[in-house]
Amino acid sequence: MENAANTARQQGTTTGTELVEVVLPGIVEPEGLQIRHRQIPAPGAGQIVVRVEATGVSFAEQQMRRGRYYDQPPFPFVPGYDLVGTVLTAGGGVTPGLVGKRVASLVKVGGWASHVVLDAADAVEVPAGVGAAEAETLVVNGITAWQMLHRKARVRQGGTILVHGANGGVGTVLVQLARAAGLRVIGTASARHHDALREMGVTPVDYRAEDVPARVRELAPGGVDAVFDHLGGRSVVDSWNLLARGGTLVAYGSATTRDDSGSKQLPVLKILGRVWLWNALPNGRHACFFNVWEGRALGKNRFRARLSADLTQVFEALQRGEVTARIAARLPLTRAAEALRLAESGTVAGKIVLVPDTGAGTSAAEAR
Image 1 (cartoon, rainbow, N blue to C red):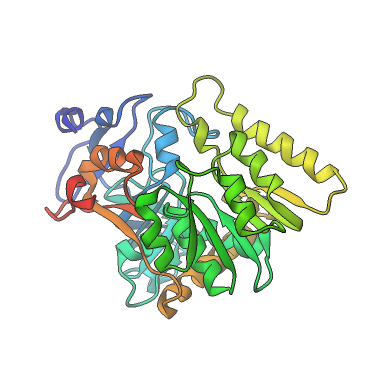
Image 2 (cartoon, rainbow, N blue to C red):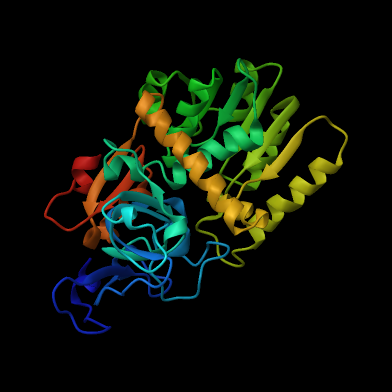
């Protein structure tokens, strides 16, 4: 991260403890990320300052650095979709007992920092005994998986589902939650991940070497009860055609268009158009496009309450052993470029976690 190391301190002076954050300045290669140092802001009314102990690298950041995430803010900004950390200070109106607690939060941007200012209402307490990195793997991935499975698909026990990218951050949580719910799971992944998927009770399909639709039809001749598709493009059409009567397609991304040029909204709009058309047909099947933020239409308070309830359910599943925290690698925050490269390589399973710069961390080579 040569550019980052050479970036001057751009804001404020640094006395005592300072805030360190990773900045995405524009459409750049991972090595174009910058490091910025500034003073830690004071919390306002209803706010808290969190010392970040773990933040993650998700597909969203991969799209954002290409300018391809459909509602990303204008450059420059600090990426980082979620975080886990300890509450250092609180502003007026915040319950005093929150200071010193470990909390998790879904932020969309801003998580790649040593300290973050949050609305206290957006923080969810992490259960005692759950480590920061372990909890981090289950924030955006866990909420996404839980809500898609239990709020959107609602497949009955004994049903069969297809999970594309079953080795990925969302995929690994989703298949474990599905198995805990008594579902049969078919999962696509490259061959190197098949043994790990079998250990989780998943029937793997090699998307590189096999005709996925044909293989799934062999495994589920009557169709599957739900498909979870983050790929978009042609895949979402194949996924729809694999559904049994009464089945649900949950589309939640457009990974196949990650490296495309042109409009970043168009791939999502195409999926939304298909979803609308399919749902208008009297065919006994249903499709939806999942966005974790869509719940905001319920109102801010209801959205926060549902988010907190669902993340708490995921943490409880972790404590029961139904879900394991699958950490692909832990890298210091200032090695975010290396972490992003590793995430984009497609060679790891689980979540890549950024941790404070204490000299600890797993190198990209070790993570493989």
